[in-house]
Length: 271
Image 1 (cartoon, rainbow, N blue to C red):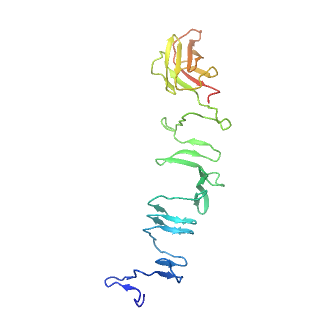
Image 2 (cartoon, rainbow, N blue to C red; image 1 turned 180 degrees about the horizontal axis):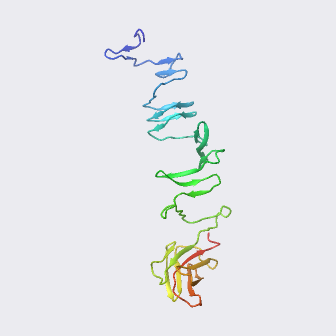
Image 3 (cartoon, helix red, strand yellow; image 1 turned 90 degrees about the vertical axis):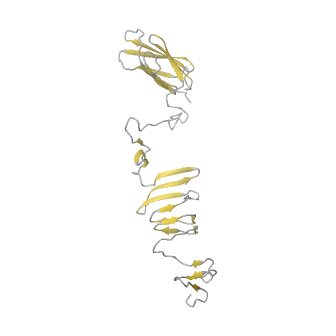
């Protein structure tokens, strides 16, 4: 490079270039255009328009890759990671470890076909917190206590599609088979859930409820009806046929009277 014997100096810029040879630093037979046997220290950014491939560790303050970045060992980054494409961890039990001052706090981990994430062993006071729109929504602590952190009328709801089961009885459904509200005149303003059925007022203080979408209404079910809006009435409930129940409303003298009520149907064998 000093004599320009193998290198060409640009006539217009301070460039020295070579189109065919390679540079070896600490190695006598370079296999790449630049082949370094030892560490490379960069005082500023390292930018690659192609792939970054490492059979060992990668360590950086800030790492920016616009194409593939492949590390055969650990990836240690002291600043942000900016990826223009996918970030893939391909390993048995692949783990994304989150640390604070070299102390392991939380992690994401592949466990067989499962995704395991949470706080590390020893971090018993930490919680798993799910945030939406910058707001804490759900918190789970070490003792499996789950907090729904919203308190307004339209928030903090838990919706379950079919079953609510105890851990020791994973097939027994603890959700009610059916529940709802019927006004005193049996008008359509009442409601039921699951909503696939109907109700009618068959006489003074007599109501029949039919459901087409709730299984488990059978002679073994438990039916509870409670007067709505008044403490002077009494309700009784009985099974009629599969999917059909009867609610009767009485006053304190045992006489049938029209009255609004709520009801719940549960079944010990509701699977």
